[in-house]
Length: 122
Image: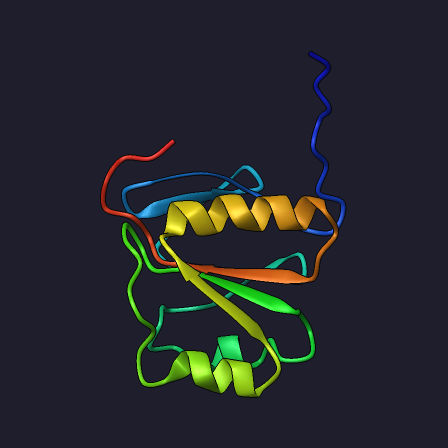
C-alpha cells in the first residue's frame, strides 16, 4: 500500500485532543478553539457568537464540535449562521476535528469551532 503525506498549505490542522485541550498545528491550545482562514481566532465558546457570525463571506462551512457528544446550538445560532450564508454542521468535537482536517486537505474554505472533550482522546 502506498501512503501519501497529507499537506495543509492554507490552514492549521487539528493534530490531537484530550481532556480540556487541542493540539493545533503542533501547538497546545486549552479550552474552546476556533480555526478559520488559517488562523486561530479568539473564541470563548458557544455563547460567544460574534466570532462565528464574522465568518460570513470568509468560509463556506463551519463545523461545530460540541464536546464529547452532539448537542444543539444555543439561541437559534445555527439558523442565524445559515441566514448569513454559512453552512453549519454540528457534531461531537472529535468528529468535527477529523472532518475539518479532511476538508482542509481538499482545499475547502472551512472553519471549525471546537468545545473541549472531557475524556481522553488521541
